[in-house]
Amino acid sequence: MPPVNDPRSSPASSAAGAAPLRIALVGYGYWGPNLLRNYMELPGAQVAWVCDRRPEALATAQSRYPAIAATTDLEVVLKDAAVDAVLVATPISTHHAIAKAALETGKHVFVEKPMTADAAQARELVELAAERGLTLMVGHTFVYSPPVSKVKELIDQDVLGEIYFITTQRVNLGLHQQDASVVWDLAPHDLSILYYWLGEAAGSVAVTGRGCIVPSIPDVAFINLKFPSGVVAEIQASWLSPVKLRRTIVVGSKKMLLYDDTENVEKVKVFDHGVQLTEPHGFGEFQLSYRTGDIVSPKIEHSEPLKLEAQEFLGAIAERRQPLSDGASGLQVVASLESAEYSLRHDGCEQVIAAAAPS
Ligand SMILES: NC(=O)c1ccc[n+]([C@@H]2O[C@H](COP(=O)([O-])OP(=O)(O)OC[C@H]3O[C@@H](n4cnc5c(N)ncnc54)[C@H](O)[C@@H]3O)[C@@H](O)[C@H]2O)c1
Image (tube, rainbow, N blue to C red; front, side, top):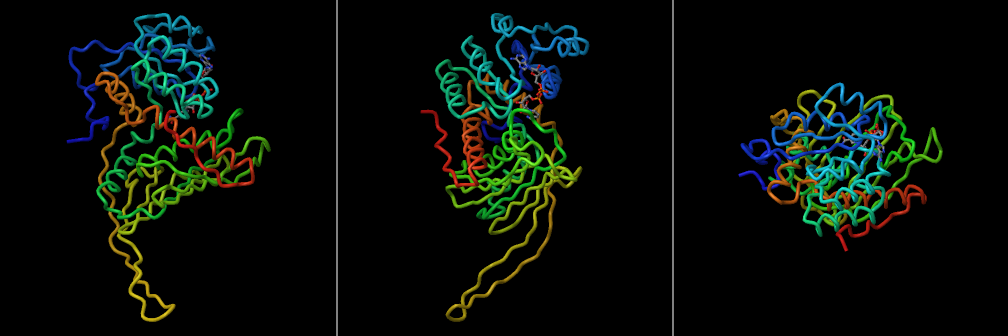
């Protein structure tokens, strides 16, 4: 049986007869249209509103979907008692205020990554959602990506053995953000993936990087993480690179793995490679045995992560359970980003990541 929080087991995709959830989308810029398209295709959802500050964005949305009401005023959406849930796809600095207002008017909330601009804001949302009995979910899209789920499965089945370390590269010639460093823009993806795979959050972080183009906004960062279990990890994040790399290597005691999200097929390869320490022959001597065996690429079903993510949101609301990427996971990632940014701006000092549980 699939685990309870596996979106593929969600009844939202198969619920017959239940009234569709009425949804409002706030933010129709670059990412909002992707959310809207997916929710429009789900039988369990009915998108009632699109809200954006820019009238031209609303005009575009309405030309595609004439049946959806549009407004520049968030209050109008929140006052509509028929709206059950709000999706927030606005810039990071606005997430907290919009999500808080929506929860306070009794709406379930899905908020894009990173959940908020600081951990105190994230904690407040988690507590508010719990008090009101509402679903709070964060858009950690990659935890709904089939290759990421496959790696999770392999780790959980002990195929790789004890995980020693993970390195990951997320670099390309990317759009420089006006109000956030590359850490806040790109690392939420890797942090959410690592925390999902390992089932634990990092205990400390040390980051070096620099703002090469705009000195006050770091555009390259090398993020080093230590986990309570002993796993160490490094995330390379940059908007400056001649090529687009989305490569992750997981090294375990039994096997090693390469996950390359830029590959069209064979995104995940498992290498039966390893090194073992054999019994020492004398004082100060040791021997190593090297193994280079088969390389296997497991079959991975193709599904759009955003569709699975949307199904998970509807399923969690319908079943009154925590979604896979719940508010607590959003808080963990934001707390880690906050510590990472501090380290980056203080000469790479190692920063303990404050326990991310709600107070
Ligand atoms: N999950 C993913 O893979 C993924 C990918 C890209 C972006 N994102 C996230 O999506 C969010 C939006 O990013 P984007 O690139 O679409 O930004 P964007 O700037 O392109 O779009 C944001 C939109 O929000 C609107 N807006 C701003 N403040 C508003 C307010 N108070 N009320 C209503 N509308 C408001 C803007 O007019 C704009 O149209 C960010 O949190 C980003 O990190 C997630």
